[in-house]
Picture 1 (tube, helix red, strand yellow):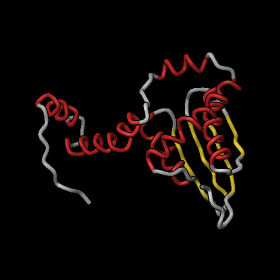
Picture 2 (picture 1 turned 30 degrees about the vertical axis):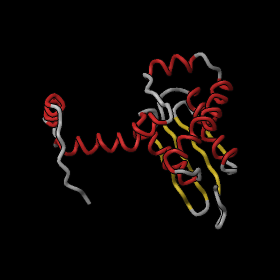
Picture 3 (picture 1 turned 180 degrees about the vertical axis):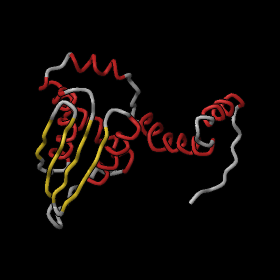
Picture 4 (picture 1 turned 45 degrees about the vertical axis):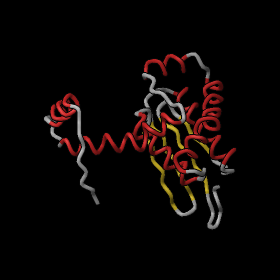
Amino acid sequence: MTVIRSLRLDEDVDGALRKISEEGESVNVIANRTLRKFVEWDRPAEKIGMVQVSRQVLVKLMDAQNLDEANSLGAWVGIEVMEPFVQYLHTSLSLETLLSSLELLSRYSGRFTFDHQVTGAEHMIFIRHHMGIKWSSFYDGAVTSVLKDLLHIDCESDLTDEFCSFKFRLDAGERSE
């Protein structure tokens, strides 16, 4: 369902939108996608103090870490950054709100792709990236800390240079909050 709304745009913004639309998408589609990103990502990220950092800077910073340090940094991020981020977005931390937040991070940060699959009681979370084993260790620390320490879900992780997977079971009636 859509809503009709009139907006006043600065001339230069309108010109830029029209130029971008020449690449094949309508101004309406571009504006809607941009506003969605603002509502779902930019505004919440700004509210909790997240900033954009170039991939090159992140690679350089991670290069200075060993695998254990990368994992510890990820664990710290899971507790000190992810928990408040998830709670800001959803007002509570649960498996469902964590998964929703990871999907948003995947969509808007451009750092990884995310998937979650459920077969019966077995859950699999997949994070794919192209930044090396230290980043896998970082993501392992972040996701595992939230699952184990905050949601009390025991999980197994598997890491490669470009991929992390997390496997856990939630039996019928088991809560993840």
